[in-house]
Image (cartoon, rainbow over all chains, first blue to last red; front, side, top):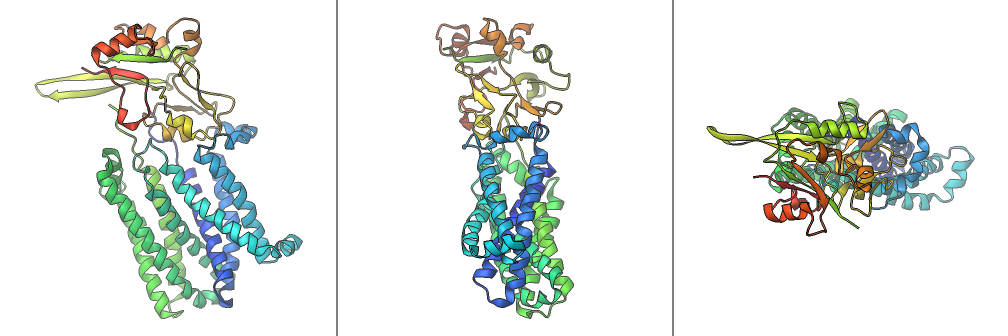
Length: 294
Length: 180
């Protein structure tokens, strides 16, 4: 019997869709609510949101088999609305164009950007809604799967949303630093965002793992794989220590030091958050355990 | 309209895999591909123990999770209650393989589509029985109409108290097992 059907392409898709929609939310937050000094982050976030989700979607299409070789089959993809993939297709085909238009509008790229700039508030509100939908749906996609009891919990979408926001913020901060390294000082204000969302992520992850230990036999097998089994070195080192604890501490220091922290540490902490988000999704996919049927 | 199912008496199964071969032959499958499996399970403790062979295949669930998650509606249920995959509209997203709690679906990489046990529907509609049922040397499987109280399968289920696997999952499977 086949054990697991999904692999790295789906993991990369879940990660990119999450961080792309998180970057979009970070950009909109900066443009709407934060003062002028945060404009570089808004620009960076808006520039990467669309491309990240689009690359993720390419991974998703590459994972198709008949639908990849005979692409016309993809017209059927939204036929059954009780399938989360159908909803995903609808959400992504709304979010990707809006994210790209928003990037054009905020950075005034070509005449399209100039026209879109007039409607920038609409793009921000509708886009944010679709960004939350994208990040959440990647969690719902696997949460409705009753073939894998470990995934089958409403905590999954919450975890994915929290992780999407922290990885999106991290990706936007890295790109902002690449565009203009001097903005690192102002980025310290957003370290608080990392503190909050990494804390939420850690809390939900802890609940997911510990509740899975008693939820069902199979969910417990998956959870044990993560905390003490074959995947435990990756879980504790890549996800917990490097992906959550160290960036969390560095973000607190960064927030209080206000721009005095070495630039390499600021960027390093963001890179760790990205690595942690990717590892988290990989471990959730690879710890899948089907129900014991006999 | 009948509602087809299979009753399996694991106490008769000798684990010869004839059903697997007959299935591969009927469905034109390669030797690495199959729609049915035999899982063996040890029971009891030394010195009183034995091995149980449990033939497995698609349960043709009435509340089929694979059908619910299929984005293209390629998975559908026929009026006879047989769950089938439309080869022309399956995109190979493999969501159904993740959703199936019994993990009874496989992907044919050379065709790019997901396939599974079809209850040999073309034979059944002509009045025959599925290949795995006919070929079994110890007559482990009984195929028939679950809605007809006088059918061999209904009487067997009533007499033996056979039950589907993991009824707690709520998928309403149509393969019944007599385990002891």
